[in-house]
Amino acid sequence: MRHVLIVSPHRASRELLLRFLAEPEVQIRAAEDADAALSSIASKPPAVVVVDLRRPDEDHPLFLALLRKRHPAQPVIALVPGSLRVFDGSKERVRDMRDVQPESAEGLHHLLYALKESVEEVLTQHLLRVFRPPVGQA
Image 1 (spheres, helix red, strand yellow):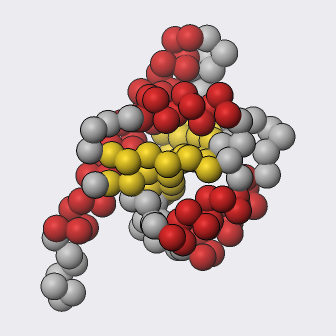
Image 2 (cartoon, rainbow, N blue to C red):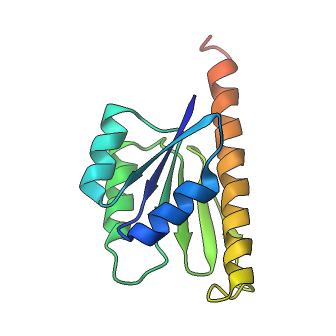
């Protein structure tokens, strides 16, 4: 079973992301702060961490820096205003969402759909790494 960790201090955001990303073959956990997230990652590393950075009052940039220092190959998807930052464990790419109004229902739908697509891509890459190790490391 593949594991996803959602990090957001806002309960409503955590619940929305938990429900939207729910799949039968994916176990989703949630953490409300950096300490809970880091202990969760240490006890059972997820295939991907989803961090909600859409609110300006959060201190998640520090969490992301600490996460990258402690777990440099950990895949992370960060929801930031206007984009999704997707780090698959080796390279980072940005999905531009600036043309989407996040306040509208349609904008939220586009953001969530892009997030789900990105999570599925990272989970697929995770499975490929599990079943097909790099050449010379089999």
